[in-house]
Length: 397
Image (cartoon, rainbow, N blue to C red; front, side):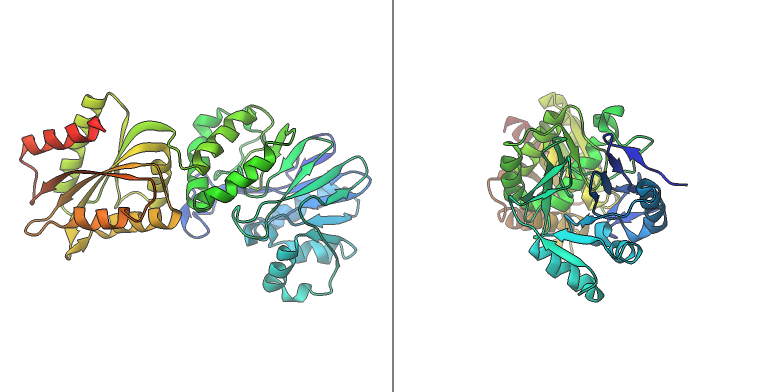
């Protein structure tokens, strides 16, 4: 059965949700699934914006056919070439061979890399920043958004409906439940954590490029945002834009503390939990605690985007770092997190050295502070005075 919904009277959502997918990009857990959004504009000219992932191919084809209702599409606009959005390109072209493909020059190059059989298959229009596509009532102005989060990305601003088609920007993990609109949900409860985790892990490296895109968007009268993942925004746009302003400048949302530990036998975990309790008591701030071995690193990265103060407990393992903590630090370096305060606890039964190794990695981050006071444990924590000194230092900064 087809699943289509109206964004406006003549703009339809024709995407699909995948609730069976366990990992997005075969990497990030998506327990709530994910949506792949595509849009159809039924004007004097009929336009498809992007397609969908191969996992929802049949549902997408059914939605597109029902939404067209006998019409033949004139244009297929590809804003983003990533396969979860363009995998159905050839199927659309085969079904509608007279369609014209519209995309950036870089997108055309990348599409030929994915689909060598595309060459000569259809008419193409190459667009760039400032170019427009007029479909009758609607005028779509293209905005270059390179590295948000691929180099070919375009946004499209509908000057008539005041809608920003934002490619992957402003997207989120999570399937769409019943309605495509964010304002039908308690967004903070249903989507915010997944939106943060999506941004931090997928777009987080490209803060400067997101800032450039936000500056362009600030000059537009935007009344609705249609992303390629997650719900459509038509209300409280300032809330979403404020989050992106924080995330893209690596500014913490709160002064909270995140305690993240690795532990082989439970002794480092016990010390981390004891420290977390004292930090909460002394700071009167919210403290979250995570076991790096049992928590996918994408959740840890998202939490570090949220909280200002990061407390890391790590055992020394084969004269090196415990692998889950090392993996987290490597991800932080790859993303380039900034503006955080780090506190270090280490454990080592005979030669604790993980604090030094963590510090060496963390010093590769810009605009971050690493507290000099380290909690060193040899086997198990019994020194309450050392714990008091450490947590005093943590809460004093």
